[in-house]
Length: 428
Image (tube, rainbow, N blue to C red; front, side, top):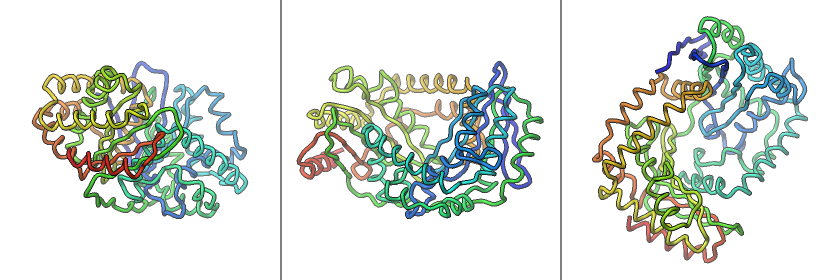
């Protein structure tokens, strides 16, 4: 268990402080409840674009590079990130440099300039970032997968946007989007590490009390219209085929997510998982193979990914289908389940060794659930999962009307192959 205290400022901004012993580090994280699914289609990619621009100059640090230079001189780790539902800004530093970290994070969120010339330059940076990920098929194929799962809805769009959408974004679009989404009530500031609650609360309040009051609008609800398997195969001249499968499942508020996460671990969560043992160890067809659970506010899925020889796509997909069918029939044993529970206990213990992970966990819990569960309470929910629970969820999600597949590799006769796999998945 970890100790934390929460305070809500007069403007509605939430502050949480989690002191940690035996560390000289402290992590400051400002998590904002807005991400790419909140974007109008015309400015697709603007959440991530805005995240970049916060570092390009403030009133007191007007030049590009000023902020990074200060942080580098402290020896601090720092970055920002954009997801589909949040945007985060964090600094991990020596506890002695907390005041400087706080000053910088509050400065970029409250006093950024968004200069026209910097917006133009940063467009070029983001276009190169898009190019970089186009050349990383292992990642790109997941974007394609989410595009087909959610059928062009905001939750399924690429976080980076497209080259066309980025080119069209103007400075006024940036200002409008910030003014409509960066409000006090949808921001959580977390401090974890070598700190004292009363001191941290006072310093954060002094900086963030000026944050504009209010809350942003909720994103459009995700609609699910799938009735049959969906398959998308992309022909690309690369050295291996990258395969991803997704089974529509549960959102982040559904209690069945604990069962789903155990299934994910058993299938492909570690090196001795069922997928890894079959496809990598026995068949020798993949270097990487994994599964994962991805949950959003109103939707989610269980994903499977692997990289294989181009000519082995059919045999690997059949093997995955065989493993999933077996799971529905009770093929996941009590021993499998016990190992997965033990794995998650160990991973959770390791996770909370660092102040950064503690900060991320607390912020995510607060921004979405409006309360913070202790890790021990999560473990208790995991421990309660039975073999019967596993079978029920496997039967619920491993169905033809929930299956989606995206493939990228050196493939011809795409329409013929897509029809073949759609027919194959009808038998699951």
